[in-house]
Structure formats: C-alpha cells, structure tokens
Image (cartoon, rainbow, N blue to C red; front, side):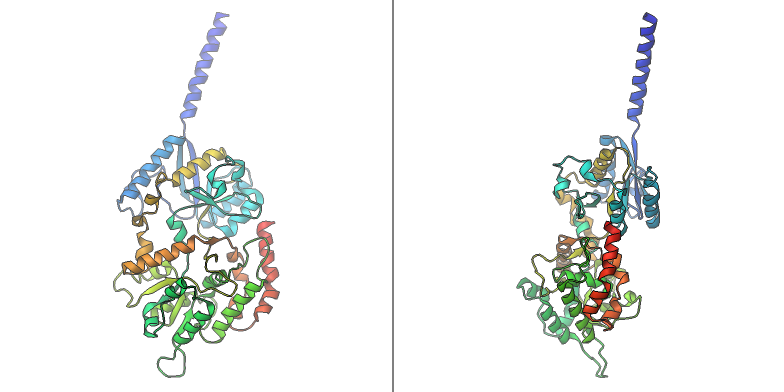
Length: 449
C-alpha cells in the first residue's frame, strides 16, 4: 500500500510539474493581414519598425506589446499573407475547421458574406451581455451593424479610423474669392449650403477663359465612382445599406437627376472613358475645376503641400451641400471602408483571442487624449495644406465625416452599374433605377443569404 501511495504521489507531482510547464507556454495568436502593422511579439525593438521615428508614442506602442504578452500569456504575430491570401485562408482553412489565423483583417465587401455564411465568431456568444462593445460604448473597438444583430466585424475606434477613407468636397479657395463667391463653409453654418446653391456656384465658376468657345474651367469635376455615395448621402439616403435594394427609392431618383443635370448641363468636367479616375482625381491641380471630391491621400499623391514647391492655391474641405430629402444634422457622411477585423469560427479560446486583441489596440490604456494626440496624426494634417488654420479645419471636416459613418455595400455593385453611360445621358434616372434595381438586390442577396 505504501508503495502504491508513493507511486501515486510521484505521479501527481509529475503531472503537476507538467501542467505548470504547459501553463507557462504562451499561446501564439496570429493576425492575418494584407499590409504591414507594427508592433507585435516579433519586433525586437521599436527601431525595427519601418519608418520608425523614435517618437514617445512609438516607443509606448512597442513596450505595450510586452504588457499584453504578460497579462494574457500570449505571443501575437502580424502575418502579411496578402489581400488574396487572406480571402483564400478564410474560405479554405475555416471551412476545414482549422483556421490558419486567430484574427483576420477583412474588407466589408467580402468580410460580410464570409461572416454571414458562418465563417466568423458571433461575439454575442463570447462576451458578457453587458460588455460595452455590444452597446457601441467601447472606446477601443466598435462593430458593424448587420440586419440580424450579429457581432462579427470589428473596427478600431480612434481619430485615425474616423478620418481614414473620407472623401470630402474640396474647393479652390482662390477661385471662389476671384469670383466674389462667399465661402461655402459660412453658408453651411447658416444652413444655406444646398444643392440649388451649389448649382449657382458651379454656373458662376464654369468658364471659357480664353474666348475660343470651349469651356476650360468647370464648376465641379470628380471620378463618378468616388463621388456617387457622397451625393446620395447628402440627400439622406443610401444605395445598398440593408438587405433590400434602395436604388429604386425616390431619394435616389432625386440624386441621379441632380448628378445627370450637373453633367449634361456642362457644369461638371466631361465624363471620361472607362478608367478615367486617373484623370478626374487630379483635375484640381491644373485648375480645371473649382470643386472636386478629394481626400487626404489624393492631395498626398503628388505631395501637393508636403513637399516644395507647394501648390499656389488652397484646397479647402467643406460639407457636401444638402439635397431636398437630406438633413444637415443627420445625413451620413462616410461609407464604412478600410480594414475591419474578424475572429474566425472554430478558433480556440475565442474569449482569450478577443481580450488580447482588444488589449493590443488599447496601447494608450484608455487615455483618449494620448490616443488622438495630433502628433500621431501629423500626416493627416500636413497633407491637406501648408497653413495651420486650414490643416486644422480640413482635419475637423474629415473627422466630422467619420463620426457619421454608414455601412453601404456600394463597392459590391458599383462596377455593375453603368454610371458613366448614365451621366452621358444614355439612361434616364427612371430607366437606370428600373433596369438595375434587381442587379443591386441580387448582390445584396449574395451577401445576406
């Protein structure tokens, strides 16, 4: 008996030691990305990050990695498996029951279908019902609203995530001053910045400057695929924001007529042939348009204000004018875009994965002033102007747009709509709505069903 007891005690001790050893082994968490993100457990120093500048915030983000590792006993790794690689991994490894990654970076266009088809973890099944995330009250993460209330897709909450993917209406300040037109920002403050007022401005700004009978400066110019959602949002509506198409709505009809009139009446730069985005996005640089749909990254493409010589005029961001069915106080101003995050179905310990993921993004330890410090957002300011007052005003406009974000699956259907032909007058608004409403509905059915 004593020998048996001794054997059992020895066995128990060995099991205890083995269990402790296993407990000490950290869990590897892999994030599947299509672009580089710093910092993770593989970075040996903050200097190792591409473009590191040694700012206090960079050092704090690097040191925070160690805090997360110790708190959750994990090692997390950011793996750039490419844009198509993420999709392949989601479609293959999750279906096989063994996800390659613990968290995936996704785009809404294919992230939502994946989630709706059972490839994502519904965080309602993981988190406490009172968790701030589920009430849209978390300062670190938020989630995309889906028709069934599922909590599949996460978005990081910070100033940069608000301003990214915004495309404000921009105008050449000096052009408007030379035409003796009041600053549209002042009109917007008084509630007078409407579609009708915008047409008046475009009429005053569209000119034949050399007298040869050909218009060479237009009131407005933009790539239609860029600007369409901003114009229908300014009319208080959407195209594909739910599981039911909205192309056929009266509000969309108003928007389509407004845009077609703008182009057919010669107030907007003529619609180019297919792939004309590489012309339309930079019309403002040659002063061919007074107003355009722009973005910080568009102004950055040619370093308009970041490198000498700067442009000799100022581009100013302003609200889109309000349509007849819109409301300046409630209009959405940004289509949800950029990088979202999905915890795959079948992942091991989804609560641990979520907690460590959230903790990683909370590198500022709930200090929101530190999170949104302008030092971390310098590019967003400096890319839009070389004047401090305009930098701040343009940033505030982008931030306001980001605060009014709407989920709309326009990117899933935009290439199937003959927008260029429509703006050339080959369809009436009613014809476009009738002939293509089922196209939009079919695309939504593929997402939601």
